[in-house]
Image 1 (tube, rainbow, N blue to C red):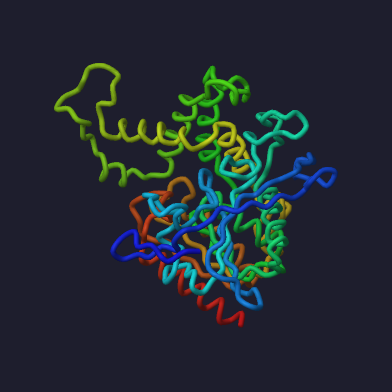
Image 2: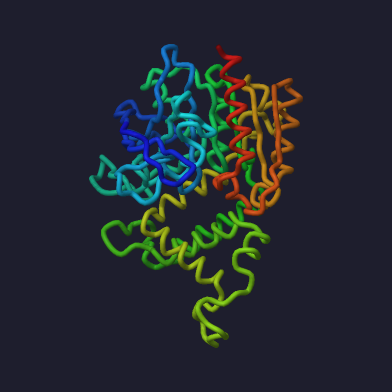
Length: 389
């Protein structure tokens, strides 16, 4: 890793980083998925930051959300304009301090950012999997991450930290591998999707599948369903914001005009913004991956899968120390869902801290620089680290 790069006046980056790859589950030793299907070989793209200490006790694993990837911090090239997706939190002296911790972030299976997914080549056909790719779950994603940890020789994880779908993976790690996880920080997440969250995901998926260019998932050799994916992203992006954030940022202000166009152009700033977000998304993401990952999130049900319908029973499986964080304006995963999981944790006698942070920016608030969140994560990791010595 090269010398640090200063990307603003007050923050230092981890510098130049490298995306690495780990391949496992070669046939006939395919990984068995929760659906019963086998998948292999599997490649995971991952990145590491900081240094692993002698007893390998300083590992922090960061699972990412829907459209994220392994590039959580730093830059690939000195001329890169934008650092990793959580660079404000991960780096030297930051909330997750890479001078103290060995940070690992891998791209989930089913994604399109270097790990095996529907756009990968199916070794049986020599063509992209498309819809021949098996449906994967949050549990499958975590099982693949466990294989990566084994490959890296890591037997204990000081903390698993993640938000949204990344937070679901945090919870899954805690109940699936309780002897391995010392602590966990689930942010803006839930143990299972509400009907509202499932409904938004289904409308987004239908937008993709209604695009004629989707072609039942077989679009890799021709035009892609860019319009459907853009609309899906627009729908999703609305759920990541809040009424107040949209009111403050856009209101009813017009975009580059003084009056209505009296046609179907983007008259309002919020319309222009959503169209821009949609266009930008299709340049970096795969439509089929969007389908698979949202389906995995909808399927996730910690209570059903690990507790016979009881969250108390599900959390009885874990021994981790928790810091649970929600945000006041998050209407996708509202605070009551975090409170419910905290109650279940406490009924098991677990060491749990909980904080609801006042924030205007909706579900995406966990990604936006917030000194209170940074201070909490830094302090929690320090306490856990000292207790683990």
